[in-house]
Length: 241
Image 1 (cartoon, rainbow, N blue to C red):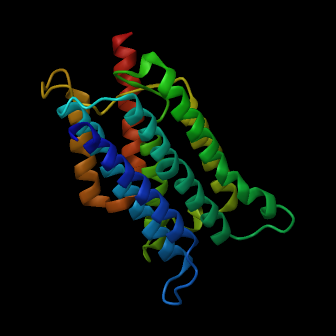
Image 2 (image 1 turned 90 degrees about the horizontal axis):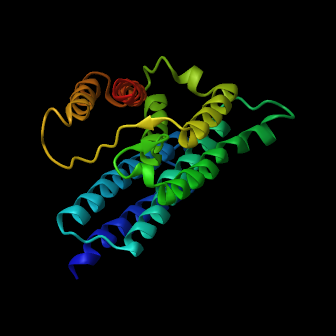
């Protein structure tokens, strides 16, 4: 039974992703707007990310590694951090000004995120270089960034609303994040094998700066955190080289 505990948490991750997709498409409640539904879908991604963290943590603590657990984790991540973020971006395209003759096709660029997330997860499963660090942006980090967008936009005082709901920005964003998922860029893994400060210095810096930024900027801090994560990763691997 012990070895199935992480798998059960992975299934909850998958359930959260499925519920998030339903929430994003939910138009039956007259009391909610499309943006409200996307905010709830963003919360579903956050819940899935927490569950994704704990299934891996418990697998290490309980020594409950298994091949089925590895495959199940990727399948759950594909829904929660691949399909659901793509659905959110698709609905953001629909919220943006529609361009006659172009938006009908441009809106589907959102699903590049699902396609490249699948490629990212498939590469991760067979790439032996990614046992301690990542190559390319992890799908949970990409999904968390996308989850923050409706939360930022829904803030009535948001300065960024007009920019984030621009169809051309959304197209460039979808393409850029898709490429970043599979790009040969080494990034820090947040897996702590021990609590040694010297060995995990950049991880501690990232976590501490993330906590401070979230307290100050709330959900608007997520894009900044992802940027810091990429910069710290590049700095670390350049120093090592």
